[in-house]
Image (cartoon, rainbow, N blue to C red; front, side, top):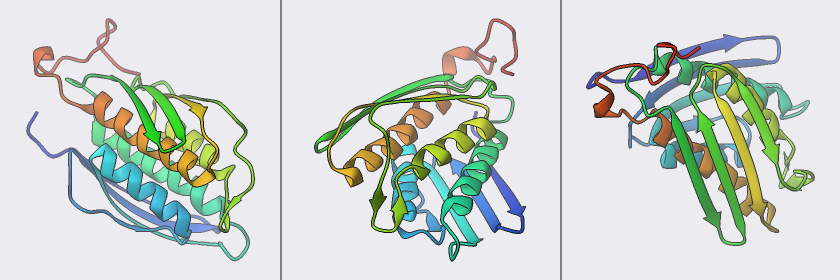
Length: 199
């Protein structure tokens, strides 16, 4: 599978106006402009460690709250990933990552099954990191998983520093996606499912 795996998504509502261009298997530096500074840092970590180049621009109603922007970006990145994966033929399908970030340790398991599911286990994500509401990380991950058509399990094993916890989560999701989306030459382009289709 030598062709470039990429997709673009545009989404406009009364709350957000978002454009995303996503390219898999890429080390090209991403351009992330979500309007939420800490979230930019998290998506950049997801992108870099997942080898997922992103050109992301969001104009959202952050004067009210960051929630709409973060959730809607999850929708758009999820849809873009789904489109970039196509029929998912020839991919590994399953991915795992265990990523430490100083005091924090996060483990992520992914199945690019076409059937969405999201589960988070670990300490409650509450409070603020700067102006960022910590609970928005789960909102992003849920929207991402539902729209990408992936089974995503995030297990936060430990952590005390909020910044480290969230960065470990985003990095581990990126690495798990990279591992699951990798092309397995031994499949010869076949869909990795006994049903012959991932859906």
